[in-house]
Image (cartoon, rainbow, N blue to C red; front, side, top):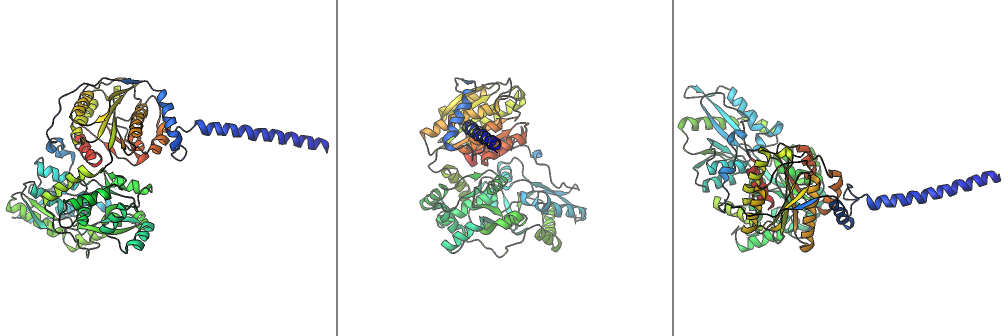
Length: 565
């Protein structure tokens, strides 16, 4: 028995020692292994220390920037738009006599987003004749904002245009293009605010009902986290902007009362999404209580219908149809025949099956808004969207050997041209990377002087060596956090332009928890890139990732900078 007790005491002693040793080891690991952990594991207290430790491992060079001449003229939209061949027709013409129609993307996509494609294909097979000859249609699916830019700039003018709503038609008319409304409702649709069921219940309890007025009041009072899409590119985003301004002052959308109301509301907006997809991803992460979307998309998303309640707002999204310019009698007849085909019982039944033609009883309270007012409202949004928050951003440019030649040339072109869309009140810096990391331009106010230095620094970039992308992100993040120490209210952003092929230095795992803790959105722009790798980087804080080829990168960057800077 004594032997057994002795053995038991020995086991207990060793067990106690093991527990103590394990505790010491675990504590040590917890204190030193924050790098690469999630934001839950990397706290605000030690993220800065972890960032500094990573920074010590990196060779950082400082480059003296020089000035380069810059273009002070407003951005040339026509020049930045890619050739129309970038957008091949979803449905091509099948006869020599045809009309070309630009269409918004919610009806020219795939599956239940492809209603107009299906109808146009049937039309082209149906043998419709005009003046004894078979006729057809060509459908190009292009987002309404971009399509408007093509038409107003004269880069490419189709025979007809069916945007999501009539706001774009008013803008085109104010741009001096002859336009006539041929059909007000090709397929019924409305824009709406999606609010989580719990938040919806809270707001109804306080405000009695949900509409654009109560939502803007709730956001302004910081009772609701809401996001919306870029009103320069998105039909729903443009509709929301005008609806909000109308709510603040229905007599003068651009008056002091409306501007003051918008500023108070915008102060509590977490972010404006570059695309609807980015907005949906943010909603999935649980960041937002509400966001905006068309009913047709909502109707085809069971996950959204189960978690969110839809409340309509603003002008209807009924896919109006416009004839552009002076069409020949034959083309007018083809357009009329096609509209008649779209309005047929069979086509409208299909539209209903695809999520259109719901909430037909909804009517807007807004009066008609002229195109010049809409354009000025966009400018107001651009000037006021960041309210009193200073935007501080660092551009991170890949100058590794894999970027040599055309990729780096396009990166330079897109950065210099895209910089015309950056407001002078923002602060900007530039970092480049290959084996090491260069600080090519310290962060500074983007006035004419700094913009000239930025252009010179970009122009002088040279490609060689390996790709230490995450080292550069660490350096840029440290620059941003140093600015944050000076200005705690600053809104921080990173823009990474690369082919995405990291092959040296630190990894995504090393920085992910730190970046998430600091809540720095990283917008990635890929040049012939590993898009999945860049999307993973951008997804850390729900930023956008752009697949930028040589044709449309400038336009895409312009849209991105309009939304964010």
